Image 1 (cartoon, one colour):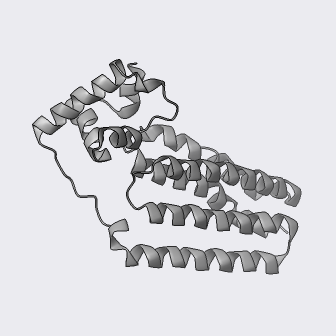
Image 2: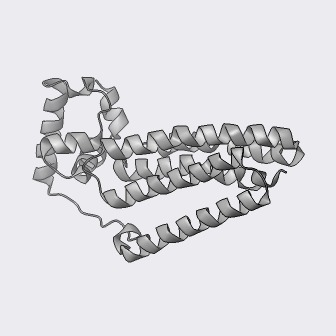
Length: 212
């Protein structure tokens, strides 16, 4: 039975999509084009699936479940690392929801048939509905980000502190250095770090780190 093949494309994109969303919230200066590569595998899979046997579909399904588990680990890691981050509860909810989806898909490897597929689809639908309900209840989740510009003297001060952190404290040697972590050290909001880099220094965060 190749019915699970219908959900393969959605499964294979779910992990990268959540990773992109979490990266965009926590590390807004990250180059977007690098994240697009995570979706590249979906295109050849979409072309191959219509001509695949049930056995091939099953192996694709198993590989996709493994891929989804890897992305889940990365997503939880991003949320744990960025302790100072907007909508923390929302991010945990999204990760937990993807975990439930993954468990549903994992169970279908061992319990096959239309009933198992239908049950999994119902669970996934209810979970998606619950996520949307929470998002609309907490309207800030879907609200447009408010643009706040810091005073020039504040930006200049943060710029000097950033340079001092790199050249004197050599903070760039730390593992998994993020905007949120630097903001915590300087006791400022993360968007001020991003604004300083993008406006005053005309660099993205990765470009700034690569200088050192």
